Image (tube, rainbow over the protein chains, first blue to last red):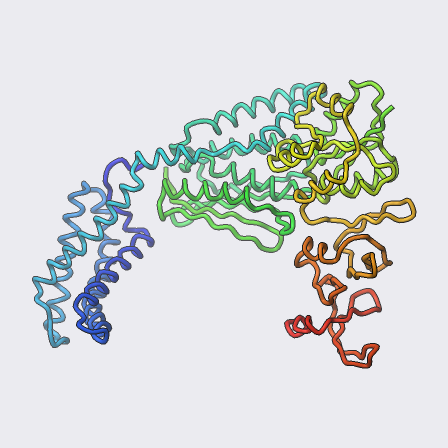
Amino acid sequence: MRKNSRLPNLHNLGIHLRILLIVNLLAAITAVLFSKQLNDFLPLLAELSAVVQPILLLSMLSLYALFPLINKWHYWQGIVAILLLEIGLTFLVFTFFNQLFLFETIPNTYRACLLSAIVTGIVFYYFHLQQRAYSPAIAEARLQALQARIRPHFLFNSINAVLSLIRSQPKRAEAALEDMADLFRVLMADNRDLVPLAQEIALCRQYLALEKLRLEERLKVTWQIDDMPPDALIPPLILQPLLENAVYHGIEPMTDGGEIIVTIYTRHKELHISINNPYAAQNQHLTGNKMALKNIKERLSLHFDLEAALRTTAKQNRYDVHIRLPLTR
Amino acid sequence: MLTILIADDEAPARNRLRDLLGNIAEMHIVAEAKNGKQAIDLAIQTKPDLMLLDIRMPLMDGIEAAQHAQKLEPKPHIIFTTAFDAYAIKAFDLNAIDYLLKPIRLERLQTAIDKAQALKPKQIEALKPLQKIRSHFSIHERGRVILIPVEQVIYLRAELKYITVRTVEREYLIEESLTHLETEFGERFLRLHRNCLVAPLFITGYEKRLNEANEERWVALLKGVSETVAISRRQQHLVRET
């Protein structure tokens, strides 16, 4: 969790998109402010863009390149460095254009540098505010509210399964109750810190063992996790609720059951998790599904902001949930 | 001696019910089913006094099975079972429909069996909102009950007081309203004509033919049967859309 102010992740596409948007928005507002008539707006915007876009482009490239370096410094040192960078780039671009005599009216270079510093200030203040909105206190409170809820359906079905085994297979019933205790301990715990992937997988296996008690051969699970990094840190209870959905919506409605495929791998410093299950359009009540997905999306966003994503696809009788998040160790 | 049919898709649940019923005197389990369709098929053969139906089963759930069971003679008593379904439980409570919560307790099972009765018409009506789209039609014919999967139905045609259900093999008669069927099944059937709902998957093409009044009208050609379905003038646009 972020506890102190930190620079936004300047290696993240979402962050750069936001910078682009804000700066261009400010340019458009400036054009509006200085247009005496409607006809003036576009030419004015074009003139502004002619200087703004090169500076913007150079800035984004420099920020991307320099991020690993300035990220190591204190926050305020980083901000000052960025301000100086922007002023420097503005100065360079304006001097360049001045030499080329490209424009009739070149605004004063020093004024441009000042404006550039102000715009940079606005952009990074925006990111600072955004971080505050996701501040530890607020985020933790929200995370607490989003605690994964135990689905009653699963609870009572498990108890029922155990009861049915108690006389005929007492050892199996005993193991099942132990699995249930572990599972519910996690479900009811304070789940705000990241946990190792291996731990989440172990929990999922326990959950699936319980479901197998009542579904037997109808439930088949394939784990494609040979390349998964077991020590990667993920928010807890990302995987288990998705498996619960897969069982409830994908396996239970099928007379002969089906197969759930769990795939985990890394690519480009990101962790990818995919859960794939059978899907029959006419059998779906999607309401329960949506709640769990919304909960997971929100928790991913609280932990990783734009750097995590969840995507669902339904095609060819299979339903797929694909999660992408930064690889953290 | 009470004859009982158990229906639940999960073996452990059936095992538990079997064990519990073994503890109650004069109970005889005549059949065990994994889904609603099997429950009705077995009920036709074994004619149980009481059916214990899990409301959540694949292929055909307990609610739909209970509705088809109304055509059995004699009508069996029905008790629903559920692990948790707030919506259904509310409907049951409101309409005094008997149900058991899983895990089932022996005493509660005993009490429910003592109280069990056949569902009354008002209760059947109350079950309708809980029902997803039907998976089968049930036909009551010469003392038998026949279940027809909805995917096998080519068309539903309204006659005077009945609806003809046409599959490749033959026709059946049911007593329902075509408009209600249209509402229930939505896109699964096209209303090509005021008196006919046709399954799109069975339409092989469209043709212009002369009708009895020697006028040219579009008809839909059907897979597996020789007859065609006339398309009303108001619905001609459906032909152009394909």
